[in-house]
Image (cartoon, rainbow, N blue to C red; front, side):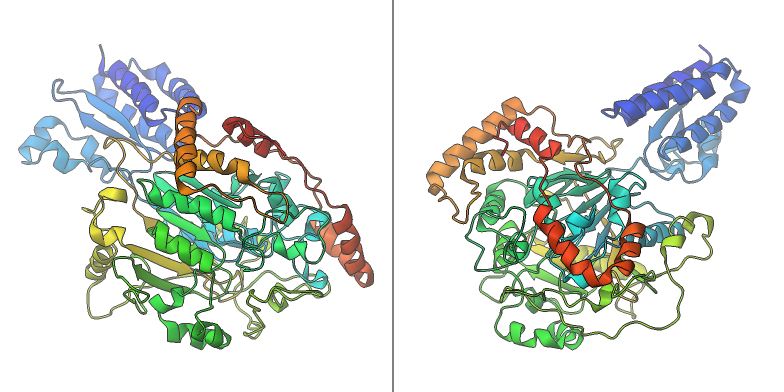
Length: 638
């Protein structure tokens, strides 16, 4: 058998391993390989290097994967080819050296070729309040990718996402009518644009609540954009990600989910208040073997400011002083979740300020170890947009929104975020909607300022990185999850970010190590998967969901544990595929942002009245995704 045929068969076999479980990509890979490779596979051995180079070019097309060529020890002139996803090849000359040359140099094959990576860390972008500015957020990520030559795997948004499809949705968002605007989401919902990076978000207190109610258990609000639902735990690339939507209200905490359209002034707000029912479900995860790697919320856990630089926070937000003094800043429900779930990372938004903290769960009592003014994670990137896109229309500047203020009864537990910052008026380079698509063409003129925080100045960068890794239990020899060191399992790294506005710290990109769950040739499976334990909890709790103001009473712990055991067995025996299906469907008409703004200018005196009328006719559609999820778990659809 010629080495050409040998190489051809190896690359076909390697493609099958690299794309195992991803049928569509595997078929595309094989077709591409056969089309470009098979015609010349009878080439003589002298052309083998050319064929290896050709294979590399093919691999570059297929998800930017890399082909490694290794000399076969049993055949002097034969190369074994392997595809590895997103692994740098290093010096290409290493694959061209013959065995005798490597031996003459006194180097082993493993010395010359970069070792195949264990499950690589994931690069995760974390966003604060989005406020409908999807184009700006994605532009910032694209600019960072170009500037630093990496690829972001996942975007996590901490609420106020504003998945507004049309004017009816806009009327269901708890924002004064004169400040409502459609935002960027409608284009993604209509498939005019596709999110360039998988996006996961929880709901905040400024959302199109009617749409999010369609996806109570979570689902795709648009292609590649996933809403976690009222509460959820999912898996992605080896990371276990949990989340809870909404903000705290002691008056609605023990109530049922009684809200439905048309909302009145009370239900327009109570619909996004956290319920004890979801908290109880999440607390059951603390009894399971695996902790969450990441937990996501909109509201802060109460008391979290005590584990970071409190004075710096109060300097930035002096009107938080009274809440801090009363230990009333943040959500008691999230505090309970933090203390019990103990995730590795906790991300949130809501208070429009960047704040970081480290909670040491090993400490007992009310006051744990306090970490002050320390960088959040090694190699973190802080992304600051220097100018927001210009807005059109009357009163269309979201920087002027007085959050949580409306005509009607408010929630006394909600923090009123007044205009504590002056409007940014300086003329600076901007990321506008026009530049979103131009980023790839202008890599040397990137309108995003990327700063890197290394902390201590009197040590080298590498020393500082290792210090941070050791402190947070993320060193290369530390294992993740329950095999972790005591240091890692007992710490939660907390990060809250600002809203998407000029010169705000609203986006950070970081590398998060994942568990090594497989052989050294495996890469993380970058597809969303349901969490089996969470599915069992959801099924066990489903009989107690209340659609009235009064929450049904949960059974005692022993009865509930019996039901959970039965649900675990049912899920194990009946749910054989945990992949989240790509089953997004449009359920409502789409409104053009351009038409909305133009109409708003023409009819501004009647705008508030029209939105109030739309609120009365806005409806919650029966979403096929929710129906499919209920069928998956044998739940009733209502």
